[in-house]
Length: 315
Image (cartoon, rainbow, N blue to C red; front, side, top):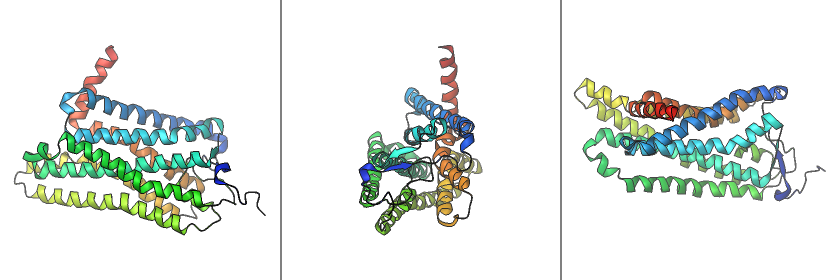
């Protein structure tokens, strides 16, 4: 009989994994990860700072951008301790409850990011299709309500998915294959029936990222239809240019997410480090790239950042 048989969930300790096969180089591998975390924290903090301090950015588009930066900061914080703990101190152990907590917040911020990207797509649609009523449709109150709805939606959908893991028994190897707690990864270690958990997890994925992606695509189809009805080529170009940053943020979020899903389902023959790299890219790319994309491609943000940086240097 396995030594893990009939282990209560409160006493379970999982073992996280860094980069399989490269454990001897974890200290060196931590250097690019530290750089990515510093970039994510400094970039998103700077975006939030300029939006709060610059009155010219107190508009719906930038309020939604501040929500995106907040979720990116939350996503980075959720993985920071376990990931760098493994690389620096080989601190692989994580209790069952701590694992569930980390899993919940990672999933919550991921769902929130997907929801914010959908809200930003709606923002662009309203701005392009009905510019005269833009400010009256997306009022400060309406944006606050959207923010509350995003948090509530994620919490209600994800809480059952995470709590259902408490009903499982774990009697096999308790080694997870990522440097953070990932729902499918934890389920694979259970020796009891996980069909309910799998179904709830799939429903959560479909009703969040799945539904959001469909409505984002629909929003852009309507935007394209509206833009092509504009007579002036110059105005068309201007309208499309306001969407470039958002399209980049959508790509940075959904491409790693889709890649991770495919690797978990169809890439069982792939080397372990491939799973690790894609799993880390799934969580680190959006927080790192979004501030860069918006700083480079959005003229107002770029100007605000350049305005703030020299004053900060002088101080």
